Image 1 (cartoon, chains in turn orange, red):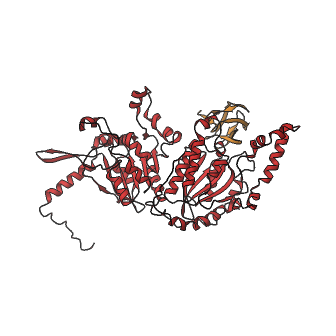
Image 2 (cartoon, rainbow over the protein chains, first blue to last red):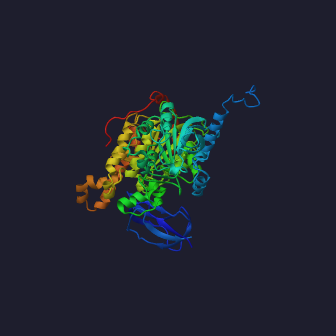
Image 3 (cartoon, chains in turn blue, brown):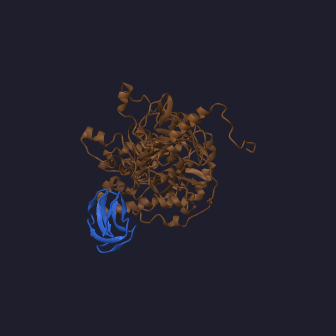
Length: 73
Length: 531
């Protein structure tokens, strides 16, 4: 099973988590929103997969490029 | 012609000379020899002759200096020639002449070669030809410049700049220059890659750096692969040293041809107008849905631009660097335009150091070649925070603003959503007629209402029984007055348009501004000191 990582493109705070472990997520879908510069920036996955692990919780600070969730193809 | 003789005329005693010419030309075609060429191919790279053939119009290449090289003689008779490691000449791209040349890596790794006159590289014949004929220059770079072996060959060390970049710099204000890094480039060739209007490298087969891994290890003790040191992930995506990356050499040649299709031959001409194939009055319904009502939610700015400009007319410059701003060459009703659009997906479109550098470069490119600019604005201001300040966002941001204020091409501003602060001002035509239109989703000010209320109404909020509720009430009151329609009443913005009407509206004014461009041709000297 190939591992897919979802990364935050921006530094900010986790605002809202849209999915839960076990969900099937299609390429381009949003896993969570990061609040940054007064905007809620979506974290989208590049490949379709099943969500295996969410590495952050609402309110956590994330850095640019940080892996926030792991999926499996 | 019909009256050509069917058999070639006799050489009238010049047979030996013609045979020698033929031999010398044949030697040039061999490049560094079959073995070196096979090794080069095995690395997934084309030879310089294959590169030129792949780039230019079929049959259009006329080589210059093909006889240059090192002859080997036996008893005074020529036996073979090792060609100079640079192939160049004049050719055509889309029927328009270009100067094209590149290092031949199969001959001594494409290092500098010293004849009476340089063929290529900085100060070479190719640069003289591009400057004198006022035609675009395409550098197909695959070499590392000088070598310390030249010290023993010459008997002395050359002073830096003996073959300087002065001509390369002059060219940047006169004709389009495109550089493709097609192998490992260091030193002079790497420098020339940067001295261009568009630089491209190829995924997996090209690297670029000031100095390669052996020098880095000797200088810093740092062990690093050449891909990690200068591959596209670093040189294009992270550093923006090179503008674009292509998947293959053929894709790189297609990108060069595409880029030149937007460019005039030189700064004394206007960019080529193409027949309009996309109706001016094409109004896309999707534009009405693209901006979410929730102000905190971003949207796809690339898609927005795509829906407005002529279909299939976009070429994005630096797509993976400084991604808070999107810079695109495109056409509107067949006329070339430069699009600068903020990307709300990256820090809400806030201008950071990289976006500022990118916007400044693109603005200069368009100004140099008389290409009107269209801004699609959604910028909350300069990026904030300690990291941004440490990176000199304020200075780089103001530099982008300064470059915009020195530009003299017509600019059109479309405020899609946020337009705040100095970065917002940098997206307007203050030197021209300051023409700004807005979508109903637009909002603007010297700073956003959120946050601004907490500072401006501190005492009132502190005295309120529920400061948070009062803060939201004041924000709502101010937001109602800050409606873009109120500003339009005061003619503080020239128009509010239905998003679907954006294309026809812009096309009318871009067409109308063409006459002014014709009166401002030629090089554009820039005075003053950039911040």
